[in-house]
Length: 275
Image 1 (tube, one colour):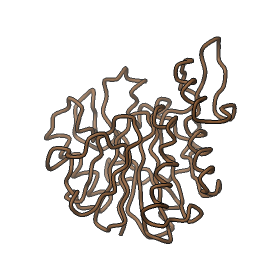
Image 2: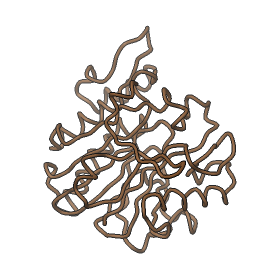
Image 3: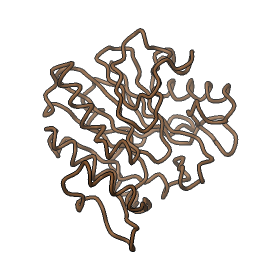
Image 4: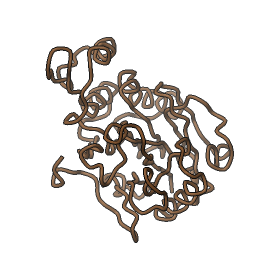
């Protein structure tokens, strides 16, 4: 992807590089960012800002990387709530009791791919190395959420399900929500087969808007476009969605890429906290 098409803003502090969503910054309601692989202390193949607690990296290095990333965002590391992602669609409503989960003590909430909170000083964290990070902010009700969308989560419409949960639990109006779809693998690099496409045919009425035929039984899949369609279906205005246009595999020097590094790599993090 060309740099001049990127829609997130770059924040740099010393060697740490983090990307932010302009529409989120403008609200003044949150601290947030999507980390890169730059600015940490981990050694290869996790070099350098690896935040993946379930990788085979040195746990002490990962913990120090959390301190580096959180300090860059002016977030207390004790506030973090880590998810336990398994490519499903379970959602956890987090509060102060969950702070430290997954980092300061063992993860107590298995099979969670999305986090929601309306509490301040609760920093939601989800992890990535090609899958799609979805940032959600209800500007009127002060509710935030993160959703992790690999191809399975995207086929399950996890972003839309988070909006539906916010409607049920916090009386969110989808029109008040702004969305950021952060760096992940782009259509340019994401080749899949019939097995994957068949899952999307089961949940989307029309896949032509985000699937391109390559060869017989091979397709390019636009996960960003699929999420946009499902979010608009539940009432989020299209103009409220910002897609970063940043492909993690194309930009493997900046981001970890599971496909680009044959699975032997670190993890970036989406971090979001109400002020």
